[in-house]
Length: 222
Ligand code: TYD
Image 1 (cartoon, rainbow, N blue to C red):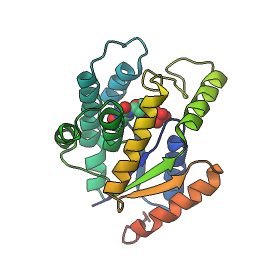
Image 2 (image 1 turned 90 degrees about the horizontal axis):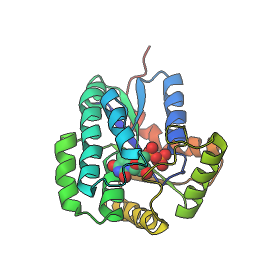
Image 3 (image 1 turned 180 degrees about the vertical axis):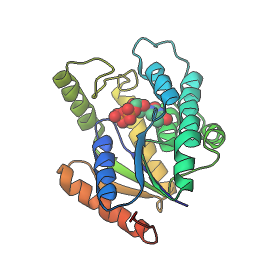
Image 4 (image 1 turned 90 degrees about the vertical axis):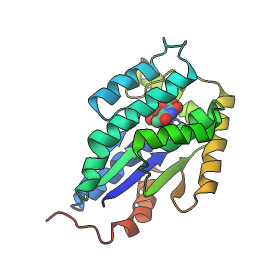
């Protein structure tokens, strides 16, 4: 029941913007839809997010990081995603478990099977019907983030937060990008890849057309 669509991609690929645009489009067509993000999306999840992105938390152990992402995810799935899917609605989520596989698995070199086991506990096995990947060369994405941060005056609670996780080196972000490519290879049916380096509206149209077939059989609200 319902439809679960996630957005993935490197820093600065415009996921949040595209998730919001798809949300607005589906809503205007009368579909029951919500948009949320990870880490966060719930009161408890947003508290966990603040710990994760805080630049002062340099001593955080990788295991702590994995468990905090997973804890935020468990809260989101239980409090928001599953209940909304159960009503037949559409849930759009900016990042989900694939980010853990890409960032903590390929990026930090943690064992993927171990991450899969933790994720299964956190989500109860819930995986997206479709995952939209916004592709952008790593350096371009980091550059976009830096520019956005300078414009907004910096700080980790600004919309364009430059956080503890972005601050990792280029090699890390390159491993993450390779990780996403590997994840897409493994499950080509679930993933849809888009070039993030194009006009916002054109990209939004392409994403909508990819999602459209999944809407058949779903009831717009009267
Ligand atoms: P987010 O706020 O979505 O940043 P962005 O706008 O760059 O997508 O995510 C915060 C950071 O958390 C981002 O660097 C990716 C990272 N992350 C992980 O490392 N593991 C995870 O499981 C998730 C969900 C995010």
